[in-house]
Image (cartoon, rainbow, N blue to C red; front, top):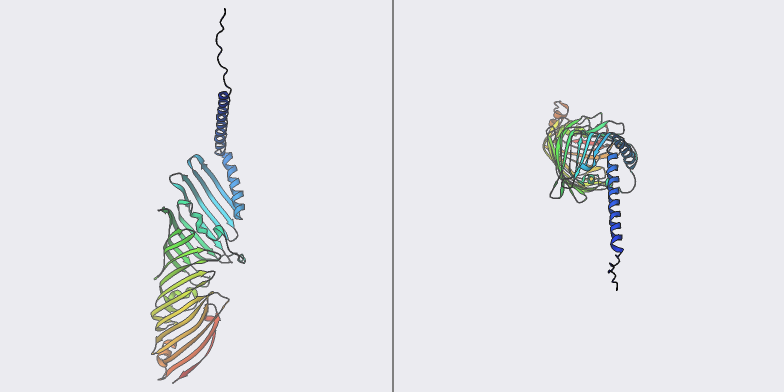
Length: 400
């Protein structure tokens, strides 16, 4: 009698199938990682970096609607570093250049940007403003820095030019630093030298200043803006919510010498300290109120006057509600409107009451006249913009 040995049970094919799938997944992962590593290595070769530079120039320039040029582009993607030199972006009415740009990213430090000697030139292209409301960065350009945890530049320059290419505002050198504080983006600006020159036939004004800004949601908050020019200072606080149309509000305090009037009104000769305060609102156009006072103002060599002005801003003009000056024993007042642009009309009504005629004419004309009369006058003056030297007037003067 023979006894057969027991046969082992047939093995199930399921474990073998799972092992094959696992091996396939590992092979695919290794191929993917190898392909990625090879692609990274190729991108970091000189031919690869030149190809990426051309791709960036073409696509970014086309997306911006202009022309982008990069002198050289180098990067180490596994280190989160990008370096570019001789960057130049040209759009209609805009030119931006920077000698060097360094971009870094890390999980702990976030996104960081550094620019060397950036230059920004904005020129009035003479084109009509586009209809409708701006969107995205065109409405809130300050949001371009919202993703950075740190950004800085030194030795910067900003120029604003008119249609003829003549600069009327130059900020140089300008430095800026952005940093993250308790989840907020805080910006510090510092200007050592600058020049304000409204036109070639007007005096230029050297300026300097500092600004502390921060992002609050989608708004730009101006915690402080301080400007100094000669013996004059201006301080502004406010918030800017958007552009095109502009929306925001601000308060302005000004301590100035009357000689600054020559910047806006060529040919005017004004001296004396002036204190002014303004509450401003932007909602497509400028509105708000203005209060100005001077204890001893001299105009065209005549004075001093104790002067005050209360008015409100309309569409590109100042509406004078109450303006008064006292001197030479009498009272002077003005009402009307002053246009800020060179195309709109300026209309003023000037009055003088009970003025010592001899003292006034001695100061105004330098002549001694044998008068013991009191002078009263009413003058209607009309002109264009703030060029008071080219207006015309008519009125009535009486002596008593």
